[in-house]
Image 1 (cartoon, rainbow, N blue to C red):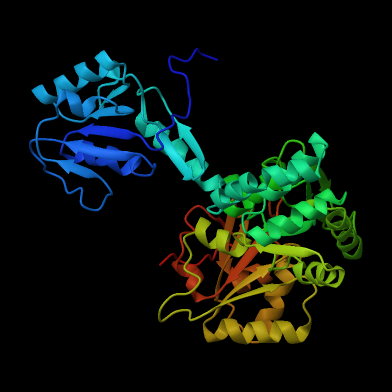
Image 2 (spheres, rainbow, N blue to C red; image 1 turned 45 degrees about the horizontal axis):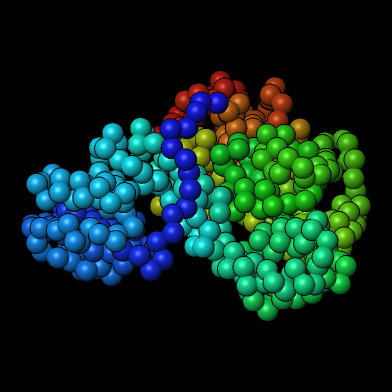
Amino acid sequence: MGLLNTFPLSFKVKGKRIIVVGGADEALNKVRLITKTTASIEIYSTKFESDFSAFPVRVFERAVKPEDVAGAALVFVAEESAEAELAKAEARRLGIPVNVVDVPAECDFYTPSIVDRAPLTVAISTEGDAPVLARLVRAQVEALLAPGLGKIASLAGRLRQKAEHLIHDGAARRRFYEDLVTRPGMDAEGAEALLDAHAAGGNGNGVVWLIGAGPGAEDLLTLRAQRLLQQADVIVHDQLVPSAVVEMGRRDAEQICVGKARGHHSFSQAQINTLIVRLAGEGKRVARLKSGDPMIFGRAGEEIAALRKAGIAYEIVPGVSAALAAAADTATPVTLRKVSSGFVVATAHGADDSDLAHWAALAQSGLTLALYMGKAIAAETAGKLVAHGAAAQLPIGIVVNAGRSNSTSYAGTLGALARGAVNFVDGPAVILVGQAVAHGDWSEAAAVATNTFKVA
């Protein structure tokens, strides 16, 4: 780790004056930042090129004078002029910190990129060396912090005295604050109730978040999912969720794999239901992490029913479904004007004859089918669809490990797939069926058979 040339701190400006010298965009950019404070802001310049009327500032269309600088908390110089040099010299004579915009060598302090969740703020600084990098890091931090976090911080401040009065044990009080600040939707009444619950000796109310982990790539996880994983005490995850996604949770979070791989079920659904109800009943925040989207073949309905019956709070966080990841990997428009007016998601595993007849009719009518859990019976399913009236020349595409770096695709026709099993790579597969499939980019796909469709 290198040594810092600056010391990060928060500078009090409440009730104080901040001087900005300059009337162009450089000054305007600083004003946008500092008007987020409660300071009184004064702008001095003999020539104004930018409009400052949208901000609560005092504008002086004249040269700055030494008496203007006196008593200021900070001075920003955003122009090159004799008046600006005077302001710098006077500020330094009086010991007032100066920031000379875009001239790091002349700055007493730097303005960081700020994540604003007032009263919570996060500042990112590169000591003036790489402001673009600071902005990119700010965007990433911004995504991790819920918009309502500032309100929670204010609630925590208002409840501090009461919390110290009711909860004498430091560790117990810390658990209350952890519980409070990880509930962005909390209001004042709920915060009071939470404090009373902790003061009574409990751990507060548990909650279960049913989170879609997406198809497996870490950067396809939603921002909300990422935030909640960082807040969870326990992560209950499926076999298909990659370890890299699970590891995005808190380091000290308990991890429980309730894996359901083909031919091996370590937990029954009833056991999973009981587990998440018990954990939340103990006051824990439970991330129930499911591959893809929890509401698509994730058996979320059964878990929700168990949570409702037990009176446990829950929240559903959608994820990128494997079918949509497969479409994205192959640039396949699953709905396409004058080609496909709809998109049907179904599971081939356990489908009966009436299901297959229905799907065949839908595919023949122009809709696109996305069949999950059908890799082992792909040829059999294709044959039954053809037997029920689907055209043998109907384009099909198969994507294994959709959305991941090792995504692999296969292309051909329904008839070709029906004639023989494909030697698939390992991983979950989605079978896309329909005329729209031919409009995707399957140029890198292995052929199901020699008579693959032509890419439109």
